[in-house]
Length: 249
Image 1 (cartoon, rainbow, N blue to C red):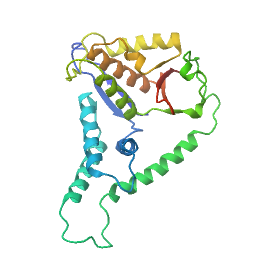
Image 2: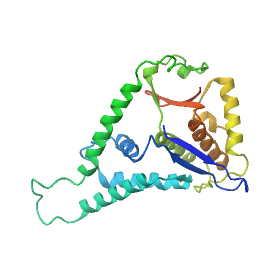
Image 3: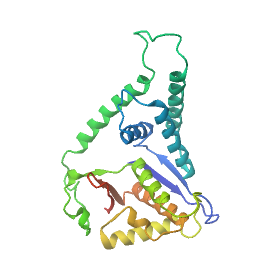
Image 4: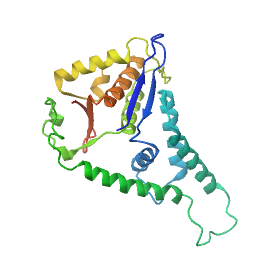
Protein backbone atom coordinates (compact mmCIF):
# COMPACT_ATOMS: atom_id res chain seq x y z
CA UNK A 1 0.00 0.00 0.00
CA UNK A 2 1.30 3.43 -0.86
CA UNK A 3 1.91 6.02 1.79
CA UNK A 4 0.04 9.28 1.58
CA UNK A 5 0.26 12.65 3.25
CA UNK A 6 -2.60 15.11 3.12
CA UNK A 7 -1.64 18.73 3.52
CA UNK A 8 -4.56 20.59 4.99
CA UNK A 9 -4.22 24.35 4.31
CA UNK A 10 -5.47 26.70 6.99
CA UNK A 11 -6.51 29.56 4.67
CA UNK A 12 -10.07 28.39 3.94
CA UNK A 13 -12.16 25.27 3.85
CA UNK A 14 -12.58 25.64 0.09
CA UNK A 15 -8.84 25.25 -0.49
CA UNK A 16 -8.05 22.01 -2.26
CA UNK A 17 -6.23 19.38 -0.29
CA UNK A 18 -2.95 18.13 -1.65
CA UNK A 19 -2.19 14.43 -1.48
CA UNK A 20 1.49 13.56 -1.79
CA UNK A 21 2.85 10.11 -2.64
CA UNK A 22 5.99 9.36 -0.66
CA UNK A 23 8.01 6.19 -0.12
CA UNK A 24 6.02 4.61 -2.92
CA UNK A 25 5.22 0.94 -2.57
CA UNK A 26 2.80 1.21 -5.48
CA UNK A 27 4.23 2.98 -8.45
CA UNK A 28 3.91 2.95 -12.23
CA UNK A 29 4.71 -0.76 -12.47
CA UNK A 30 1.86 -1.56 -10.09
CA UNK A 31 -0.52 0.55 -12.16
CA UNK A 32 0.50 -1.31 -15.31
CA UNK A 33 0.02 -4.68 -13.61
CA UNK A 34 -3.37 -3.52 -12.34
CA UNK A 35 -4.44 -2.57 -15.88
CA UNK A 36 -3.13 -5.82 -17.38
CA UNK A 37 -5.07 -7.86 -14.82
CA UNK A 38 -8.15 -5.69 -15.19
CA UNK A 39 -8.17 -6.16 -18.96
CA UNK A 40 -7.22 -9.85 -18.67
CA UNK A 41 -4.47 -9.62 -21.28
CA UNK A 42 -1.21 -11.51 -21.77
CA UNK A 43 1.84 -9.66 -20.53
CA UNK A 44 3.64 -10.73 -23.74
CA UNK A 45 0.82 -9.38 -25.91
CA UNK A 46 -0.08 -6.07 -24.29
CA UNK A 47 -2.63 -4.00 -26.29
CA UNK A 48 -0.38 -0.98 -25.98
CA UNK A 49 -2.89 1.58 -27.30
CA UNK A 50 -5.57 0.49 -24.82
CA UNK A 51 -3.21 0.26 -21.84
CA UNK A 52 -1.62 3.63 -22.67
CA UNK A 53 -5.03 5.31 -22.88
CA UNK A 54 -6.18 3.82 -19.58
CA UNK A 55 -2.86 4.63 -17.89
CA UNK A 56 -3.16 8.29 -18.92
CA UNK A 57 -6.78 8.32 -17.71
CA UNK A 58 -5.63 7.16 -14.27
CA UNK A 59 -2.97 9.87 -14.14
CA UNK A 60 -5.52 12.51 -15.11
CA UNK A 61 -7.91 11.26 -12.46
CA UNK A 62 -5.18 11.29 -9.81
CA UNK A 63 -4.34 14.85 -10.79
CA UNK A 64 -8.00 15.81 -10.31
CA UNK A 65 -7.80 14.33 -6.83
CA UNK A 66 -4.78 16.62 -6.37
CA UNK A 67 -2.47 13.63 -5.92
CA UNK A 68 1.08 14.74 -6.54
CA UNK A 69 2.44 12.42 -9.23
CA UNK A 70 6.13 11.61 -8.84
CA UNK A 71 8.43 11.56 -11.83
CA UNK A 72 8.35 7.77 -12.27
CA UNK A 73 4.67 7.87 -13.22
CA UNK A 74 5.33 10.51 -15.86
CA UNK A 75 8.40 8.69 -17.19
CA UNK A 76 6.32 5.54 -17.64
CA UNK A 77 3.63 7.57 -19.42
CA UNK A 78 6.27 8.86 -21.83
CA UNK A 79 7.62 5.34 -22.38
CA UNK A 80 4.17 3.95 -23.14
CA UNK A 81 3.42 6.81 -25.53
CA UNK A 82 6.75 6.27 -27.30
CA UNK A 83 6.12 2.52 -27.70
CA UNK A 84 2.62 3.23 -28.98
CA UNK A 85 4.04 5.64 -31.56
CA UNK A 86 6.68 3.13 -32.69
CA UNK A 87 4.02 0.47 -33.19
CA UNK A 88 1.82 2.83 -35.18
CA UNK A 89 4.63 3.85 -37.55
CA UNK A 90 4.41 2.16 -40.95
CA UNK A 91 6.96 -0.61 -41.33
CA UNK A 92 9.33 -0.38 -44.35
CA UNK A 93 8.83 -4.09 -44.86
CA UNK A 94 8.38 -7.35 -43.07
CA UNK A 95 9.95 -7.42 -39.62
CA UNK A 96 13.28 -9.17 -39.58
CA UNK A 97 13.80 -12.01 -37.14
CA UNK A 98 16.26 -9.94 -35.14
CA UNK A 99 13.87 -7.00 -34.79
CA UNK A 100 12.31 -7.07 -31.34
CA UNK A 101 8.71 -6.29 -30.52
CA UNK A 102 8.75 -2.74 -29.02
CA UNK A 103 6.43 -3.95 -26.27
CA UNK A 104 9.24 -6.03 -24.79
CA UNK A 105 10.66 -2.77 -23.47
CA UNK A 106 7.75 -2.89 -21.02
CA UNK A 107 7.19 -6.65 -20.75
CA UNK A 108 10.74 -7.47 -19.58
CA UNK A 109 10.88 -5.06 -16.61
CA UNK A 110 7.32 -6.01 -15.71
CA UNK A 111 8.25 -9.69 -15.48
CA UNK A 112 11.33 -8.87 -13.40
CA UNK A 113 9.24 -6.67 -11.13
CA UNK A 114 6.65 -9.41 -10.66
CA UNK A 115 9.37 -11.88 -9.68
CA UNK A 116 10.81 -9.48 -7.11
CA UNK A 117 7.35 -8.65 -5.79
CA UNK A 118 6.45 -12.33 -5.50
CA UNK A 119 9.63 -13.04 -3.54
CA UNK A 120 8.93 -10.10 -1.23
CA UNK A 121 5.37 -11.31 -0.62
CA UNK A 122 6.61 -14.80 0.24
CA UNK A 123 8.99 -13.34 2.79
CA UNK A 124 6.21 -11.18 4.22
CA UNK A 125 4.00 -14.25 4.66
CA UNK A 126 6.42 -15.84 7.12
CA UNK A 127 4.84 -16.22 10.52
CA UNK A 128 5.29 -13.24 12.81
CA UNK A 129 3.76 -13.31 16.29
CA UNK A 130 0.48 -11.39 16.21
CA UNK A 131 0.98 -10.26 12.62
CA UNK A 132 -2.35 -11.61 11.40
CA UNK A 133 -4.38 -10.79 14.49
CA UNK A 134 -6.97 -8.01 14.42
CA UNK A 135 -7.22 -6.10 17.66
CA UNK A 136 -10.99 -5.71 17.34
CA UNK A 137 -13.57 -8.27 16.26
CA UNK A 138 -15.65 -7.56 13.16
CA UNK A 139 -19.39 -7.94 13.56
CA UNK A 140 -20.41 -8.33 9.93
CA UNK A 141 -21.38 -11.78 8.65
CA UNK A 142 -19.57 -11.16 5.34
CA UNK A 143 -16.19 -11.47 7.06
CA UNK A 144 -16.84 -13.11 10.41
CA UNK A 145 -16.02 -16.61 9.13
CA UNK A 146 -13.51 -15.67 6.43
CA UNK A 147 -10.06 -17.25 6.53
CA UNK A 148 -7.02 -15.04 6.09
CA UNK A 149 -6.16 -16.74 2.79
CA UNK A 150 -9.51 -15.58 1.38
CA UNK A 151 -8.50 -11.95 1.83
CA UNK A 152 -6.09 -9.82 -0.17
CA UNK A 153 -4.67 -6.43 0.72
CA UNK A 154 -6.15 -3.62 -1.32
CA UNK A 155 -3.85 -1.24 -3.18
CA UNK A 156 -4.22 2.36 -4.27
CA UNK A 157 -5.57 1.59 -7.72
CA UNK A 158 -8.21 -0.85 -6.46
CA UNK A 159 -9.33 1.87 -4.05
CA UNK A 160 -9.49 4.40 -6.88
CA UNK A 161 -11.63 1.98 -8.91
CA UNK A 162 -14.00 1.48 -5.98
CA UNK A 163 -14.13 5.22 -5.35
CA UNK A 164 -14.86 5.98 -9.00
CA UNK A 165 -17.73 3.47 -8.91
CA UNK A 166 -19.23 5.35 -5.97
CA UNK A 167 -18.98 8.66 -7.80
CA UNK A 168 -20.39 7.16 -11.01
CA UNK A 169 -23.43 5.92 -9.09
CA UNK A 170 -24.28 9.41 -7.85
CA UNK A 171 -27.25 11.11 -9.54
CA UNK A 172 -26.96 14.49 -11.17
CA UNK A 173 -24.23 16.23 -13.10
CA UNK A 174 -21.01 14.47 -14.00
CA UNK A 175 -18.75 17.31 -12.87
CA UNK A 176 -16.99 16.59 -9.60
CA UNK A 177 -15.98 19.47 -7.35
CA UNK A 178 -12.75 18.38 -5.67
CA UNK A 179 -13.06 20.80 -2.77
CA UNK A 180 -14.10 20.50 0.83
CA UNK A 181 -16.70 23.01 1.98
CA UNK A 182 -18.31 21.32 4.97
CA UNK A 183 -15.90 19.13 6.89
CA UNK A 184 -12.13 18.86 7.14
CA UNK A 185 -10.11 15.71 6.52
CA UNK A 186 -9.05 15.72 10.18
CA UNK A 187 -12.65 15.87 11.37
CA UNK A 188 -13.64 13.07 9.00
CA UNK A 189 -10.78 10.90 10.29
CA UNK A 190 -12.10 11.44 13.80
CA UNK A 191 -15.59 10.36 12.70
CA UNK A 192 -14.26 7.22 10.99
CA UNK A 193 -12.23 6.34 14.09
CA UNK A 194 -15.41 6.60 16.18
CA UNK A 195 -17.22 4.28 13.75
CA UNK A 196 -14.41 1.73 13.82
CA UNK A 197 -14.06 1.97 17.60
CA UNK A 198 -17.69 0.90 17.81
CA UNK A 199 -17.84 -1.69 15.00
CA UNK A 200 -14.27 -2.91 14.62
CA UNK A 201 -14.60 -2.91 10.84
CA UNK A 202 -16.79 -1.49 8.12
CA UNK A 203 -17.17 -1.96 4.38
CA UNK A 204 -15.65 0.65 2.10
CA UNK A 205 -19.03 1.59 0.63
CA UNK A 206 -20.65 1.94 4.05
CA UNK A 207 -18.38 4.88 4.83
CA UNK A 208 -19.89 6.74 1.87
CA UNK A 209 -23.54 5.84 2.47
CA UNK A 210 -25.78 8.80 3.14
CA UNK A 211 -23.25 11.26 1.72
CA UNK A 212 -25.05 12.77 -1.25
CA UNK A 213 -22.69 15.73 -1.38
CA UNK A 214 -19.72 15.01 -3.64
CA UNK A 215 -17.33 17.21 -1.68
CA UNK A 216 -18.03 15.19 1.48
CA UNK A 217 -17.35 11.99 -0.46
CA UNK A 218 -14.01 13.39 -1.63
CA UNK A 219 -13.05 14.27 1.95
CA UNK A 220 -13.95 10.75 3.13
CA UNK A 221 -11.69 9.23 0.48
CA UNK A 222 -8.79 11.52 1.42
CA UNK A 223 -9.35 10.67 5.08
CA UNK A 224 -9.09 6.95 4.28
CA UNK A 225 -5.79 7.53 2.45
CA UNK A 226 -4.40 9.50 5.37
CA UNK A 227 -5.45 6.78 7.82
CA UNK A 228 -3.58 4.24 5.71
CA UNK A 229 -0.48 6.42 5.93
CA UNK A 230 -0.87 6.62 9.72
CA UNK A 231 -1.28 2.81 9.97
CA UNK A 232 -4.66 3.28 11.65
CA UNK A 233 -6.49 0.93 9.31
CA UNK A 234 -5.98 -2.14 7.18
CA UNK A 235 -7.95 -2.47 3.95
CA UNK A 236 -8.67 -5.93 2.54
CA UNK A 237 -10.85 -7.40 -0.18
CA UNK A 238 -12.68 -10.71 -0.21
CA UNK A 239 -11.31 -12.83 -3.05
CA UNK A 240 -14.69 -14.20 -4.15
CA UNK A 241 -17.21 -11.43 -3.40
CA UNK A 242 -14.95 -8.45 -4.13
CA UNK A 243 -16.20 -6.69 -0.99
CA UNK A 244 -13.67 -4.21 0.40
CA UNK A 245 -13.54 -3.93 4.18
CA UNK A 246 -11.66 -1.55 6.44
CA UNK A 247 -10.33 -2.86 9.78
CA UNK A 248 -9.25 -0.70 12.68
CA UNK A 249 -5.83 -1.86 13.90
